[in-house]
Length: 314
Length: 314
Figure 1 (cartoon, rainbow over the protein chains, first blue to last red):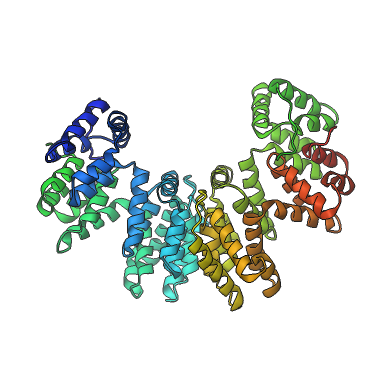
Figure 2: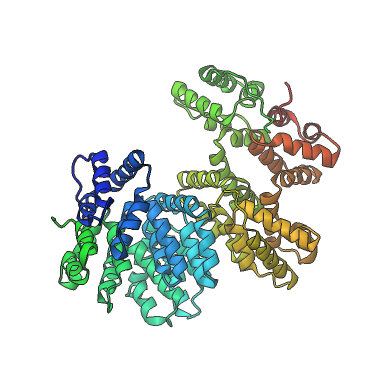
């Protein structure tokens, strides 16, 4: 369930005019920006951008970028984009940064097959290259094989489960871990091609016959490597996306100096989807409501904007 | 340019009724089937199937399958399907057969990015699995990596060329061939992720600096292997699809006992696209018109059907 609260009816021209007033002249009225954009869904934001363009022949996104700054700007910028454009930007930024490959895993494994396709289309339009092309050019060896496989997957989304196959592939994963060689090709094949439903069955068989979940076994039995961390992220994003996101937030807040990019990413990408459930997991796991944590760990307009997306009353 | 000749206006109900008469009662009227289906494009065939279903509550494709047989049946069956459904069937049959992986390469490399996506969607609907899932399950090692990479690609289709990159990647391909180790990962990365326009520039740079085309070098310098043959097929499908198809036809006719499946595949998949150009290449290269060759090498209703698709007057 979403946390975003939107009005029943929206006048897109009024919104565009309101935003214009907020960015025009001396100073910027951040409060207005938050009160409008913090309460509009993706379809509404698109219409507002269009209305703004029709009236002022100016790109609202670019104007906002030039008027606000810092974490607030990054959050508003990510939020105002269409979900697929936003994911394309998140992926591109992660590739340039080099240390954020888990963001690629997250986009590839949490989104539906059609959503991931939309991201790949948006990536073409924006960067004049394919997503897999950039992923392949920025990575090497097994990390490359895993990431390229994940972003190019177009998984079957039916609910059929092949029980025999699940048992067989749970065994392959088990053997891959046990013999320490960690047969990467087979692990990659299974994770990048099977349907999510089928993979869940495989992970469950693993747990049934091993007594421990595959992510826990991976954590304990193998030496640490980027590949292993990304495999774990993929399994968690496919198997337990809500718990995965809860942990991203937990780690982001736990760090000395909050990891604002991670906080922004989770809140912005999930506010219209399942942030309410993620927040529930957060409260259960950390004994503190997510909005209180945001309150405590962030400041100023950035904080107010996140709280708006979290559905807290102004 | 297409070879298919279709009437200006088509009455779908009349077509459906005509086909019904052709398959009903004792014996089948193959001539009617050919005169109707051999002169209808994909959109028209779809409407006829729908009209047939509406009138008789029967699947025309299944009925035809039960009424005709042999090469004629296979050709009609492939022809009557939507292009993306047909490609899904061709890919599935090739995977089951095991020795026809070049068909997978052909579908992945000749079709546009959106056409390939449509094939992947059709594969989901028909087989309840993803295309890449079946490709991965039926192949191993480098052949698997190449084929999965090709079928999952969603290539950028802009016309931009990065000249520096083309030079650099032509060099990578050259080194890969020269040191005999044939660095498969890099070859696979380049072939499966770059845009076709970019790859053409790379192949041209290779030819300019090497004096010979990459396909010729591959043919002469490396020991024969399925991987090498598939790499060559991919390069030819991307770089010179018309010449590639001419050669498929040439080899199919040259064989003792024509390879009807290959002939059917090329004629059925290209009749609405560029079969006229392929036929011109064929005439130039073999000193015989393609329809004369079909005349000579095939028989009966199968022959008449292929000639109809080749645009020869009844």
